Amino acid sequence: MSTDRIVLHSAIAPAFLAALKSALSSSPQSDAPTLVSEASKSRVQSLVTSSLAAGAHLIHGSVEAEPGEKPSSVRLAPVIVGGAGDEDPLWTEEAFASLAACRVVSSDEEAVQVANSGGYGLSASVFTEDLRRGFRIAKKLESGAVHINSMTVHDEPVLPHGGVRNSGWGRFNAKEGLEEFLVTKTVTWKD
Image (cartoon, rainbow, N blue to C red; front, top):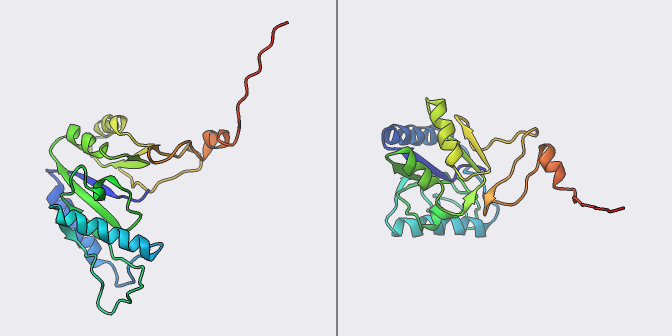
């Protein structure tokens, strides 16, 4: 549910990216986030290097080993990549890492089209000053959940949670989650 893809309107992209880079650079010195395995780290590094070779550009971070880092380290500092294409695996696959791909668009329609590209749809966020506009966009997004002016990592036990497309089947939480454990049976009769 963490953010893998960021779609920015061209009117706010420069300011947003500057603020994002500043926030990532000013965090206290600590160890980079840990990935689940060396294979996972290698996969993420490959996603980034392939994307850069295909014409994307690095906005923040690096997948190169840090000075003094052990070769077997599973840590990877946050990486932000811009300009990944529609077919780029960095854009179409879930990373499960501190990695995000950014795309800049010029309209709401283009934002929806770009956000709906790829096969996944677990959680999305729409940030806007116009709540009605946010709801219009949310209706068009192919996602199990859309959070307006809130982060993608958002799960409440009273709301059903689950994805669409390649992000899973069914729901958990709430009444719908309980119903996933049941098998509905129809019995008919005639006297």
